[in-house]
Figure 1 (cartoon, each protein chain N blue to C red):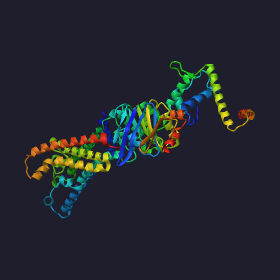
Figure 2: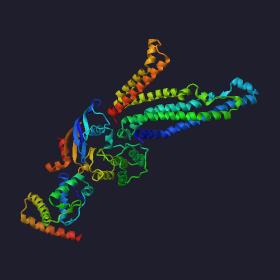
Figure 3: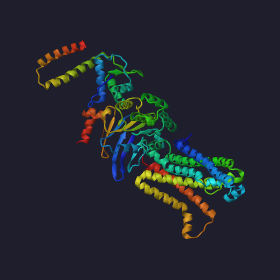
Figure 4: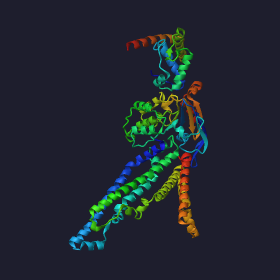
Amino acid sequence: MNVNFNKRDPVYMQVIRHFKERIATGVFEPGQEIPSRRELAGRLKINPNTAQRAYKEMEEAGLIYTERNLPSRITKDEAILKSVRGELIEEAVDSFVHSIRSIDVPVEEVLELVKEKYKNDGEEVQDD
Amino acid sequence: MNRFVKLVNFELSRFMKVYLTLAALTIIVQVAGVIVKANEYMAKANEAINEDRIPMAQFVEQNGAMSFMDFTRSLWFMGPIAICAAALIFYIFMIWYRDWLGKNTFIYRLLMLPTARLNVYLAKAASIVLMVLGLVSVQLIILPLENSVFKWMVPVDFRSDMTVGQIINWDYLSMIIPQTFTEFILYYGAGFMAVSILFTAILFERSFKWKGIIAGIGYIAISVIIFALPVLSMIFLNREYLYPLEILGLEVALGIVVTAMSIGVGNYLLKKKVTV
Amino acid sequence: MIEVNDITKKFGRKKVLKGVSFTAEQGEITCIIGINGVGKTTILNAIMNLTPLNEGQILINGETIHKHSYEKITFIPDAIIMQPNMTIAESMQFMADFYDSWNQERATELLDFFKLQEDEKINDLSKGNRAKVNLLLGLALDVDYLLMDEPFSGIDIFSREQIAEVFTSHLVEDRGVIITTHEIGDIEHLIDKVVLLDDGKVLKQFNSEEVREEEGKSVVDVMREVYQP
């Protein structure tokens, strides 16, 4: 686990985002055990208080759950899992649209380019 | 073991190498001195008797029999004592300054110990006293030994014997090695008072730096004046209105006052004013 | 909580602290930053009663410092504070002798963590390793508060990483930490609270996550605003 944190977003939000990405891509499976707060702080090299905060927020959002004194786990709730994926995609598209709009390109041209790039990129990845 | 005892132990151990060197130096130089002095005398006697054909009795009459005092008056005996005394007086200052000097300022640790800071002060003072007593003990132990070496090297006809008791009664040795318990208390009490005055003066300097030097010297002056008040008043008034025993009693009382004052002021400085 | 209330400190005629106030909570890492060097160490010295103040007051959990406080709060200056001719084992023994709050188990763990050899003399250690010994002797005490003066300055990058790791571990957890630094670099993510100091005054104090969340600014952004208006 290695995260490059940026310096202007709250660290706890970056941690949550990191978790969401892993959930969306299936690295974290539903019901999987996650590191303790202390472990997480050590691995990500962040303040234990920040790890605590991130877990608290995720717990409230239903992303993770804790039963009694057992370690926390990734949620098994399908609806939440799906929404995480949707949310991430939407976020990525949003920021893409935001930056592409500033160059003022027709949407068809962009979509064509996107398709092509996406295909090539994917093949390149497979070639590796 | 409480922290005061541990501190004393620590203070003693960190000076131990130098201290043992001092003790060894004293033993080696003094014993060597007895041998050298005895040899000198006997060489002279042999020369006179064998070469100049002077009868033994006449030689002893002319030159005097050799006594142990001929050795104790020499540099062989007094040199090591002077060196030890100088080293310990120097260490009264260094026992504090070494904690501030250099990159590794140990005073941080000492001031942050979970014990009254006065214990640091008292432990250092106790260490000095113990070191003095230790060296005096060494001297006391090796005196009979030296006396034996002396007797072994100089035949009985050439020497005038003294007991250890007579030896330590002589001159400045009687200051270092008191004859009675009362003297012991008086001499070493006065010594402890002097140490406490110097410690407090050092702490003035450590607390207020340049101004502290003046304050420290001022403190020493005030202490000395208080302690010497009875004697001074007699000198100035030119009248002896107290019996010697009364003066002694007064001095003891003033000595206790000055020592208590030094410890009290030292404690205050350590707690409220000292700086790392 | 450590409360520093309006403290003033003069060295001769020079005022190094001109009414400094801030608080540091237990369980948080508070970072005192001063780009111009003066005053930070003096604040830590003053908290530990190692230098007298001209005005103001410092409270630790509501009390002024006393001899028993040193079992609960400790200070790690930037120079090692042991006799240099002692070995690491001897300095640990010294601490164990004098502090009830010495935690031998944790000391052994730290020795391992820092990969230090017990029988080495402090004198023979590299600068980085000395800093680690210094840290070890402080961290192995079961204290509520830990004060560190420039723990990252003048040591190699690997030692620095290792020391930073301490902050994210259970070794520091639940304690209040105050550290001073002149460059925030490596530790921006680690700290809870920032106190910006300049010319003997606190220019600003803030919670670093709050500033990111509410203003979208990094700690360095805030420093830029404060120090170069």
